[in-house]
Length: 80
Image 1 (spheres, rainbow, N blue to C red):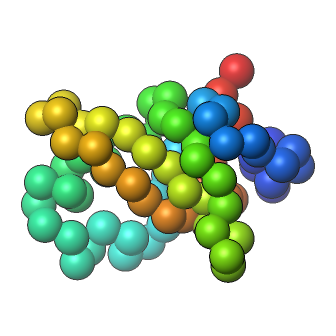
Image 2: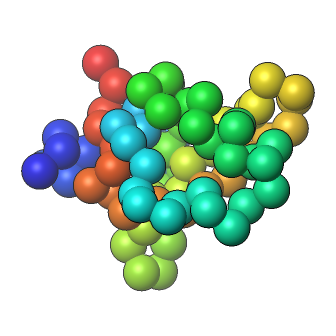
């Protein structure tokens, strides 16, 4: 269990994506696949949880585009 699951995160906290779930980016355009792959292990912003418990994460890609992804909290950890 990640420390994000042990402690309920608050909006605005910095987290890191520990890994991508299998198939998570498979159907996305190549640019989005690259942007999401590049943020694994890097600090990104946690926005909150959606109605089914997924973590909403926000980041800006290298090309300046703002991205939002929704992911199972077991794939994130609170940044220290």
